[in-house]
Image 1: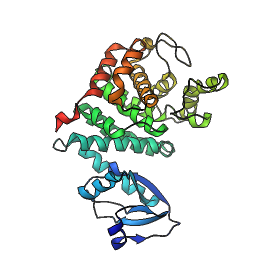
Image 2: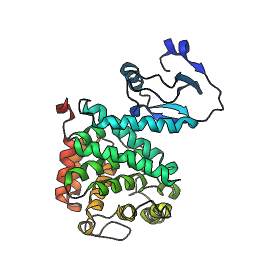
Image 3: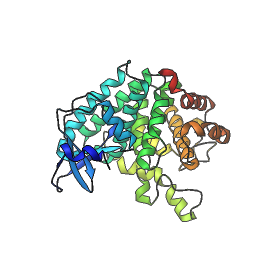
Image 4: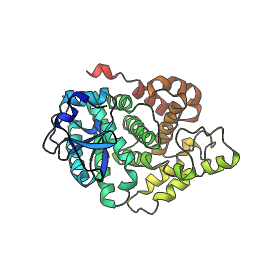
Length: 329
């Protein structure tokens, strides 16, 4: 129950038949004027909590987070105004006097938002380009802030579904790619887009990110091993998706000395962006299987998997994941 003592003092019950979309609390910033109305859910009803031109303060946002309330709601017709607001918030990623932890939360919240809305984003090229522009701002943040990835992983928590896995792989890929010196900004964007799309066929095939792929029937294993190509097929008709993104998706289960799938390619023969992506995807899957956050899994992952991946990239991953955010202040 949300702030029971004050809830009915200033909230107005709205019609139940209004359409809403959810918005992540982590994409809201204290003191930034809202361009949309905000609703909270109470007893299966949506109740107006804030109106456009108001703003949240830090204390109120802190109360939401303390109660582990991750999302609020806005009228679906006001989603364009929310996206304008989000663009304003993302401009704050480059404000150096804001704590790294706060900016990392904003960046990770944005990636989660993009992952959750990827199907809608793919409906038009305009929506795709707008999403791409938001990802570019996150890329710039990671390139300019040494401790960005550690903060984003702390904000991300453990992947629990396909969209959170996609956003975590996106963060890892951007962080490792940016610090590797092996790829440029264009390839970083391709990694980010591929992360949001690479497992898009799993649900259709009857799997999810938490399923144990080692204890399945031979028939299901064949079906599962088709998912990289199936995911490519789902988006291949979109002309605005680059060939590089499609290639990363198709190759994302290749590793080691040709022991992956679907084409048994040798990992070290893959392009640098695919090498980075596959390492980060495998690492997050390992964290999911272990049920632990990245910082608690990285040593064991390296011990068990170092032979399958590029040692230099593994070193970058280890350094980035273990980066102590507290030292940034």
